Length: 231
Image (cartoon, rainbow, N blue to C red; front, side):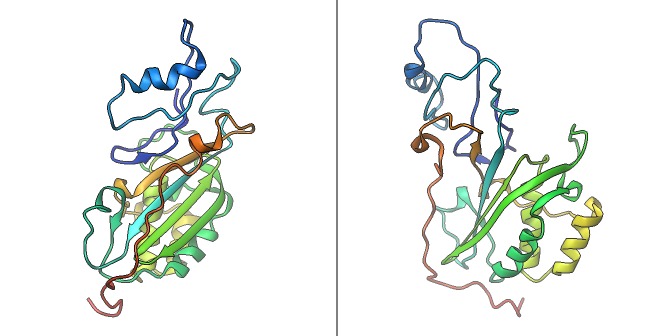
């Protein structure tokens, strides 16, 4: 059982799973045993024994996602698998941050839920948000008690439209508050998104095994996006 599912192409730096096991393998050897049989794109960082009523998904108090945008003009092949390249305009991260901060708290987020969800309702609690620019990289982190199906990618698509000046902040907030899902047509691509960590009331693993496992890229502003006033 996993702490959460991710769309195809989305990364997970600290996915948490649980399983029932009966056999001779001690808990300290599970990571090595599994890594010897998993493909190279998956690695178990740590294993721990938990009570029988503990659940990777339902015991979690939060999930945190990171979305990385490359906002420089020239493509970077080394960043491409882990970021969304937006180069036409320099993103206004302050306008994006204001919209994102307005979402903090418990709300109905049906405007950012893809079709096909089996949830009974679209309410969840956004606990923490952050947008940081580092040169040509714009890194957004969003933490919530739970996420709707496709929520982060739809949210990022709208925030980028705000940052590029194609969507007014007032229109963004109206779409969210009114649940106007039919107006939310842009979803950010999967490769820029990463499940960063999953939190529990009591720590399960050593911090080195689960906290901030995706490295932060560092990229100076060697070139600039197009002038936001031109096309």
